[in-house]
Image 1: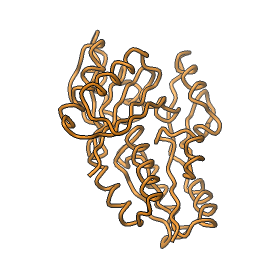
Image 2: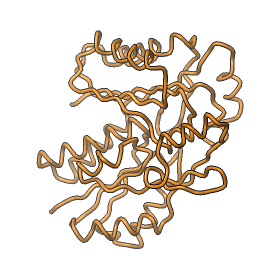
Image 3: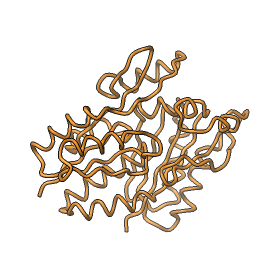
Image 4: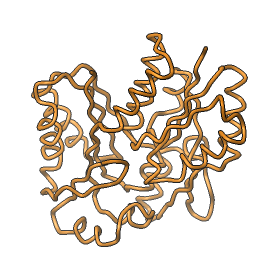
Length: 278
């Protein structure tokens, strides 16, 4: 029985990658300048980054039930069943809309999974599911691996917390921490929520993120994804070098985040996701 995969634009996987891997995409909407755009289809990361630099304050909106239904119906013409992997339900109503659409279209043929992840973490889970299916894994095996990967680690830092607060992803009090002169918050996705860990000197952010991963994975073989919204190149490279020198890396990937993520974290964000194979 052939299984199709679908995700959303919070996965930070470009349409090119998704097309190569035959993964369906349901875009999240970005409101900008009085208009509503479908991420990637109607709004590129470059265009949003430029708008933010010009002072824009974008907000996101989950896809509609009809958006999911259209993609589900199209994929069910090709696949027997669908596994739909989506951004944490604690951060977005995207997975809720996906479930409504699945019930409407074909409840016995569509399984919707709240990954509890976002950005590099969600992208890593989607690519892992692709890999397992290519290796001949059954649906239940893939779902068990997704459940295990919900407990994987995604650490990140943002230039300030105002974007997360404006989009309702963080209590307002968090802005005070994030806007301390010369300091940046270090955050983690935990059980689908954003958790504040500590602050770090701005120049020490790559080191702080690398140290958190190393504390957890030292001595293990890990897979790493670094995601950023135009963070300083030396930060991205510093984080990469810090991980390469101290970890047994089986696989690594660096990605520039799309409009969905950039609208919620602003520019200059840096994230790292890590997981180990069992």
